Length: 247
Length: 219
Image (cartoon, rainbow over all chains, first blue to last red; front, top):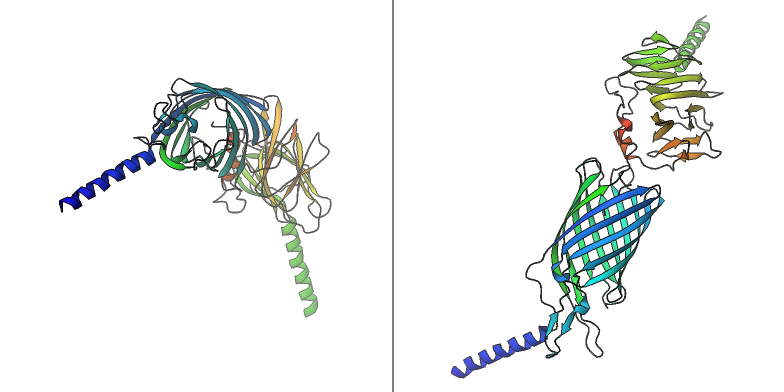
């Protein structure tokens, strides 16, 4: 009996060490999956052009995040179709390549501190909005090509939405997908589904509230001879924005 | 004798039918209206050349004959240039205000029902539509939307026409005619022309016309 108990605990200990070693190269799930994001934006139209600027704060848990500033312009091709170009800079964002092995112990991994790391972003985009017959509902779609200056990562951000534009408050739903172009073997590394409302505080000042679940997919950076591994990190996002539209 | 009497009665009946189908008159009036600057009442007859004006908070429905009707909203001025739906065609000149028009569908015929404003002309192909003239600073805007059927629109300074289908609308001004599209504010229009209890004015119709809900980005 004593022998069996000893064997049992030895096996248990072995399992612990094996699992711990196996999991050490995979980032841990954050303690708290709730993310908080906020933006302050301004918009100004001149004929077919629209200039815009935004400041952002984010706490994206798995992707960390911090502060963001972005300026850009959109050109109106038709009544509801636009193309855009934006330049931005942000601090704190984590990429897959920020999960690194310790120099003194390559079997142990950690997240590099990105809190004060500034990186530039270049964004190209195209968007369209259409009414759904005479229902009063409309759908919109936007595609963005993002380029992250820090590690030359590129991704496509696609977003589809359904909204019900009304005076006072416009409710809607959105699905957003992030498709890595040059840094992951998976086809999708982020996805979110939101419910949102745009509220008219005044004719020129509006508030946007968004809430919804989503996930990040982390993939092990490519290592020659190593197996590709990826795992999902769920999250719940809360976003509050203020938009001001100059006359 | 019996056959002659029946023939006479049939002829009289046909005459009544023809006269009823071509009679043009005011069939509904709320508030005040004038015809050629003289106060007019319900059942007043109409003819080519008449200039009709409605007062503030007023509403009139005109029976134009041959199944066509026109709802003339408050503070509106419209002139009947010609009144002949069957052969030459009818032409109405809307100087200001709003109207809802229903034109009888005539299979195989060209556009015999036309409404013209300072900036556009609309040829109707058996339909129900709304036209409004709105002053914008020093210019005039004409808004038109189609409830049933199709309307051909041509800006006064344009050489080509655009076809506006059911559920679509356009804005016409000195810059031209916009592309036909769904205008969300038109969902709230009152299209009733027959039931006096259901008829109501479209006074605030254009308040939302100049705001495009999809024109504003939220991020």
